[in-house]
Length: 124
Image (cartoon, rainbow, N blue to C red):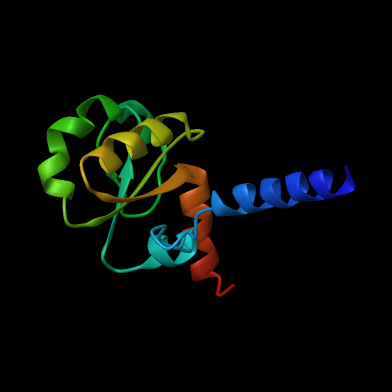
């Protein structure tokens, strides 16, 4: 009986460990600070124009979420950081960009991206 229990536990352990992936195909997560501050990034505020005009990150362009699909050609082949007020629209934008093969990063909110930019300026 003990041999059967041991055999069952051993077989279970082998099955469980065999199912684990090695993660070789997963790209390392980039440091958002580095991406935001890189010279070749496009910062995209996906909020409506009125919100964008009320305040945004430095050098950000405004492409409202509803228009993002129509501007895909101008973003392909570029590094893009998307953001909005709280991250909900940015999540949706990430999904659209990823489906279209754009190298996209989630900046979450414009205040988060602005804080990253301000951090660099203050030398932190």
